[in-house]
Length: 316
Image 1: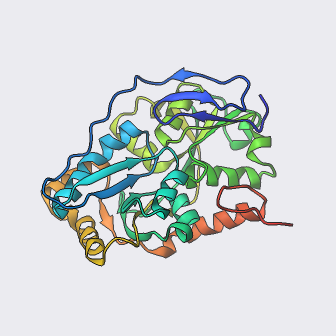
Image 2 (image 1 turned 30 degrees about the horizontal axis):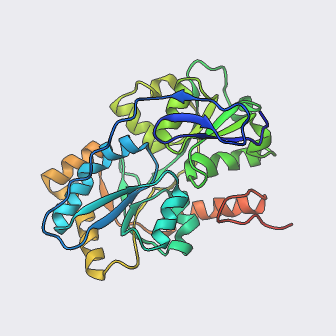
């Protein structure tokens, strides 16, 4: 396989190569199961359309977020429709078209697309007292690797092309080492979720991956079956935590209602239970300045000629 070959690791658990790959890999991670719809609240006139970025696979997303969306729907007396897309780019397109009211997005996607989508910060989770997160460079626990350089000419998994922790940060690490991902690694795969990236490393399907610390830490605390098969070689500096955003087309009244629901849900028993299940302390008001580090990261990649859809490399 050529080093520049990009293969695809499906968000529903199927790993395969794209049409450019002459020798695609096919691995069935799990049996596909139908996903029940988010509970709807009767009597409301218009559904609130909520999108969740592909931080975790669709089944895991539903498991993590269903109760939260039900809670929001009940407190707004509105039906809630859940939209899931495989990539952050697809989610951003929906937002730009005005098809989504509220979304849980990746930090990288938020910074990259906010000028196009005009989405507005609503809130952000606080986890372990922090509103930051990191990228973890992980390998199998039994692998002899001790640094990024040991992964040279090995297979590596990114999550999403626009993921801050799952692509932008590790790409910057490689650029700082004087290379590019396509030249540094023998093959680059996309998992389209952080839990699938962890699984790919744990099962030995790839030699390394970069994942969201929030996802790795959450899974490790709840069920370490797969995280225990990995080890962390490197942690990035802190970045602003993935935010909750709303469409500018949503009414001011709805925005204020949603903001109140998120910022006060830790004050009632049901909200506290849901937050505990999600591994969150509470939701807090998000500040634009939290995302300056990612803005600078994108500038660094752009200045070094790294192609990111939606960001043109600088001309030298």
